[in-house]
Length: 264
Image (tube, rainbow, N blue to C red; front, side, top):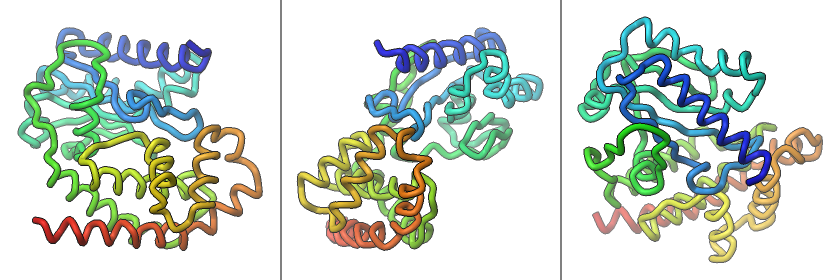
């Protein structure tokens, strides 16, 4: 195990221990999903995706402590890796009924206590098929794995997001990430499965379905070692001009969605 993998494992263990110290036996299950379980975690790009289920609704005092848990651990453990944790603590019964009284959510832009929560279809599929239980009981037999139709509908929603928000790009590393997202969507439409972003990009190149080959190849190089490229001026300049490439590739996705729509 590499030093980075050891640090990642220790971060997840420490965070889970802290959850248990707050909730005790009320903590039912903690699952890891996303890039880590798909063996595609890239330091400088990826998040650490967790979903935590409680046996009952969260009390206000519990939620207040959990809200600042990431920052507390950053300061006490002197590790910025805790900031990469994203996810939520939800009552399992509320999750099943999709009606929430109190949810603690940690995201890229911050954290909040809310009575609204959405666990998208791709996350649910990853949880059901590739999720790893970190602690507690495995309760996935209480959940339904998304159908192909539900995955296709999720792809359609993501396509609409790409059309709306990726017409132009900025110097964020995620600007070229749209190309990997489209690759994953196309793979999902073809096979009814989900693979990692890196594998999806490689698949799209092998299949010859991406109209902007050079951009996708460069994206995969950056994803392989984001920290090496993220602050380079030439990388930032390139990222700012990827909107057209993303939209060209989205044209390919649109055609595949049209084929799927005719079958439903």
